[in-house]
Image 1 (cartoon, helix red, strand yellow):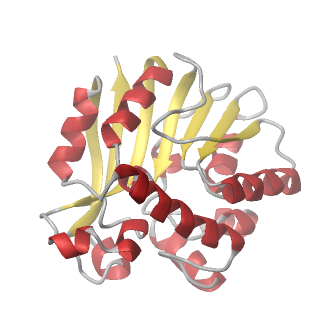
Image 2 (cartoon, rainbow, N blue to C red):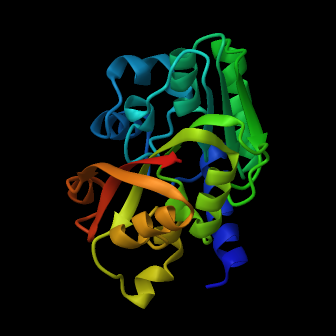
Image 3 (tube, helix red, strand yellow):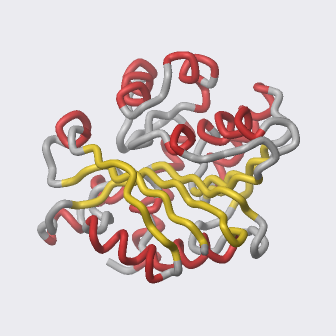
Length: 246
């Protein structure tokens, strides 16, 4: 499947989710809350930012990110803004959070949520994570939650992430990776493509591509239980990594 075709399928799926008319890996509000709690978010955070939680993640990158007051944080694939608002509390008023998403409806939803929650240090930009609308060497921390697997050009995502990070900047990612190769029919399944499975890389390949982009990579944890809970026992896991720009 060609890259542009993959992007089109993913974009259409998440446009429906943003509009509330379709869902690739989430359900009703209760199901979204259940998923968020299973992958590491507190009931307090889920309740506080209920409208921003779409139940789309595979981990909690904010919890593992080493954020400090005053940091500039970038969220790759920011959706309705859930992780951005959590990060904004960590960096406080002197910090800044930028969310980038390729779906216009998601960006508008996130901006509306930002207005509702009253955050002045969060900005949402329309753009692709393969071509970030962000300046070189301007970001302290990058976070991303179950999004990079959706990109048809992951090498470009890692290269762009490396470009925008400051020297010593860090990237904290929760993402779905494969534990064995998938059959071709699964790879071309549109529902699984937008559902975080068909476009995923093998675990070792994922890490090596980050290293190729220039990062020093540390695997923080691996959640294999998520396969049974959310993915019908498919050969995959949620990988949590920390990557440093040296």
